[in-house]
Image 1: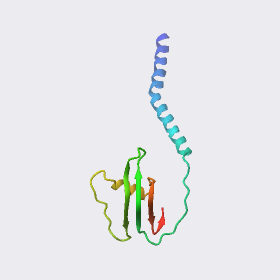
Image 2 (image 1 turned 60 degrees about the vertical axis):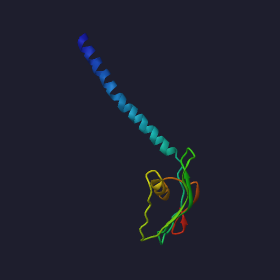
Image 3 (image 1 turned 30 degrees about the vertical axis):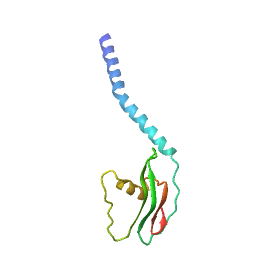
Image 4 (image 1 turned 30 degrees about the horizontal axis):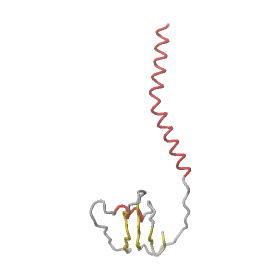
Length: 118
């Protein structure tokens, strides 16, 4: 009888230990969901675009540490034309694309599509 009880307790303890990882994972996921709900929703307006010319005017961008990655960059990418961003690794090409897609917010300057500030 004692042996059966010991086996039953051992099985229950094993199940608890095996599920601790899942419980911690679920707890982390719930925290992430709560953080998402706490983020302030961005406002904006619908805009009708006739052309898709993209223009950067003196754009500046720095990460949180304050070191400028993009400093006074200006260029125009016209609709139906090929525009290339060329430079060595780490010079900011991907960061510029993230600024254009508004994944990052720039500190200074202006980015427009069809003359409308994004």
